[in-house]
Amino acid sequence: MTDCIFCRIARREIPAEVVEETPSVLAFKDVHPQAPVHVLVIPKKHIPRLMDLSEEDSALLADVHRVVQEAARRMGLTDDGFRLVVNNGPFAGQAVDHLHYHVLGGRKLGWPPG
Image 1 (spheres, rainbow, N blue to C red):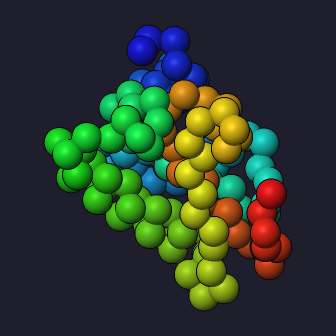
Image 2 (spheres, rainbow, N blue to C red):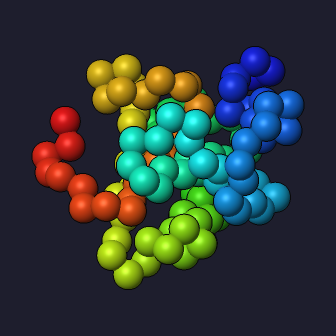
Image 3 (cartoon, one colour):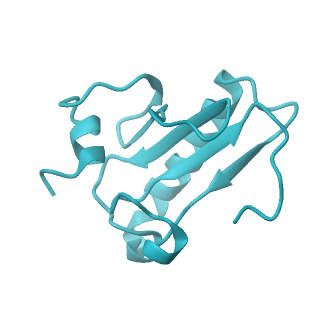
């Protein structure tokens, strides 16, 4: 998908403050943070939703989680913890149809979230 905002960020057509990157995954700071630390982790491959992952994406999904770990380390979230969120579909609050993980931390987060 050529005009997906996250695909455009991954292709460096739109600037972002990159936290971590591998050949298949990009982590960058959210421009509208919902916590003191708010990093988005995306596969560079366009996958609209979590439910669109296939068996062939298993290595990509493992890489996503490695990048989540490294982003949390770089942002100083490993001692106090962080929340990892994936919104899947409009009722869950997914605003961009490109699979993305929110890494949230830097303060005590409440529960339930919504």
